[in-house]
Length: 76
Image (cartoon, rainbow, N blue to C red; front, side, top):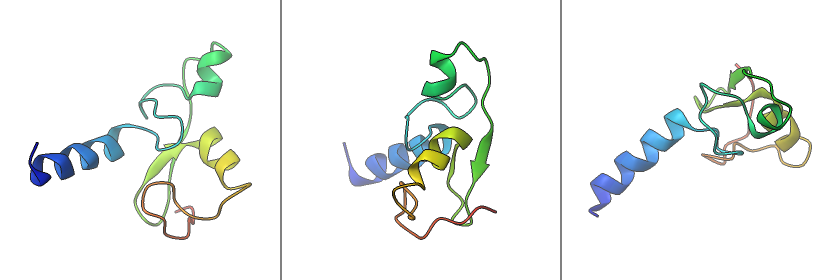
């Protein structure tokens, strides 16, 4: 796979999947899926990256940077 294809694949993954639980952003996170909930709120950081709300809330208890880009995470 060329680096161009590899970069495109990575960008596509960032736009469609939660960078923490790796579930699709348009569906429930792992926590909600386990509790049989059908949906989950999605939030976006100033960096532009999006995550399931439950996932990023847990992540930020231990780390203050975005899991995708490693910039300080701030909600928009």
